[in-house]
Each structure stands twice: as structure tokens, then as C-alpha cells.
Length: 332
Image (cartoon, rainbow, N blue to C red; front, side, top):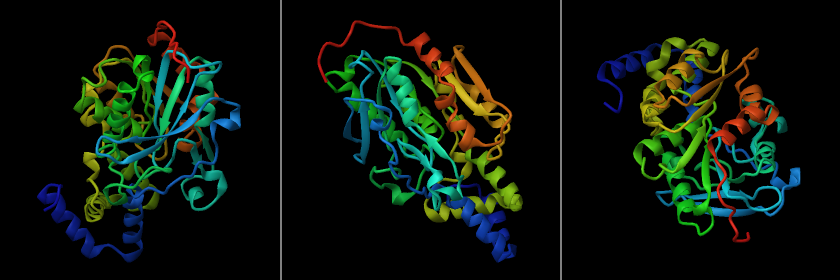
């Protein structure tokens, strides 16, 4: 019967018999969200004058090759490292919606992560950023399907093991910037391997989603909200996880490090503030803060770009928890 309850599967089968071809196409399109469109590297650190950066290939914990950048702090490598990951369907550069189709079918806006690396490196942080499997230039895995964290946690583990085994990076104070699907992945990685992340000082985790809330919101926009069970069936037919299995709420209670969460309060693409608040409340730390992005419904335009436009909150958070240690003397 797959990985959804028998009664839910039975309801999905009944919906399959009665749904119109037009509405079924909408349901399939919504479920197909987990087959990510690849974004391309439309910017590099050179675009903002960052120097000394270079390309890396890092193996995921299951061996999937992950393409990455290492960007040292402005003026030379420091002793503080931010491991940074991204959302679906983005890459380490961001999202090229301003280039038109097919990316503009999500939203015709640019999401610029490279300016965020500029903010971090100017503030004295080295940055290690990578494309998650099936995204950007990293290798394909899991039949090209995204698990919204349920497979991608292995990438977070692989990157952290790379850092811990590196002669220079292993000596640095580490913080995490893990957003949306990347944040879900990081939560599960921490839950599965708490010992690996015990030395991480803090995590900023913007826009982490529950896919049940995402699918509910999208299906309401498309006029097919009554077909949540059929969305699950279409997910299973692709080899994906059902919606209820793709949520950070399964692992949020294992997050004990200081946390900064950023969410769009009136996000049209999910069920906020309820979903975000539930995840935030489950975090097992008293050192946590929620920033609500107000007066917008646009997750892409105003959620993912928040740090790029208003860096002070994120930089103050990292400054508070990532105390300076003695400088790293080994040259790049």
C-alpha cells in the first residue's frame, strides 16, 4: 500500500477515478515540485569582488559528488566558517528567475545568494557553500527526486565530515546557514548525527517548510485542494516521499543549538504563520528568535532575499554566538 495509511490510499484511488483530466494535470504539476528544475550558476564571487575563492567537489555521505565554493573572508582567511546551503529549486548562486523560462514559471525574480556571501566575508567569515544533490552542478541521485531533506541530509553530513577532516577548516569555529529544503536537510542531519554537529555554535534556518502546508497552499491556488491524498499517490508513483514525511517538524526537537528563523508571515505558498510557528516552537533551545518578513506574500522575492537586503539581523546573530578564537595561521 505504499507509505501512506490504507484509508488515505483508498481515498486517493477513489479520487483518481473521479477527477477531471484538467484537475489531474494540476495535481501532477503540484506533486512534480519534488523533481527539481536545475538552476545555473549565473553569478560567482567575482561579481562582488571577492578574492581567493575556489571550486571544490565534496562527497556526500553516500558518495554523491557535490560541487562547492570555498570563499575566504575579506582580507584573508579567518578562523570562522559559515557552511551555507540553499533551497529548492535553487543553487549556490541563487535563483535565475529573471532569465525567463523555465525558471520564471516559479517566479520571475532574481534570488541572489552571492551578495549574502559578500556580507558574510566582509564581516570576517569564511564561507563554504555547495549545490545539494539534483541541484545546480552537483550530481544526480535518487532518480532525480528531491526528498526535501529525507535524502539530502546525507549532503549536510558529507560536507561537515569534509570540514572536520580538513587541516585548516577543522580548526575553525563553525556556524550554519541552512535554508528551506537545505534547512530541513540540516535538521535531519543533526538528529541522525548529533555528535557530528556538537561543535557547531549556531544555525540560521530561514523558510524551512512542511510540504503538507506547501501542497495545501498550492492546491488552493489551483482550485484542487480536495485532492491531498491524490497528491500523495502521485508522489509515491514518482518514488518520492508522501507529504507528511517531508517536514522539519519530525526533527526540530533535536535542534539544541541557538537558532535564528526567518519566515514570510503571509507567504502565499505555504500555510503561515501556523506552520512556521509550529516548527519554531518545537526547537529544543531557549536561544531562538523568529524574524517575520511582513507586508508581502512573496516567498521568493522577499523571503530568500531578506538577508541580502537586510544583513544586520543575521550578522548580529552570528556575531553573538561565534566567538573569536586565535587566528588560523596556515595560508590558503
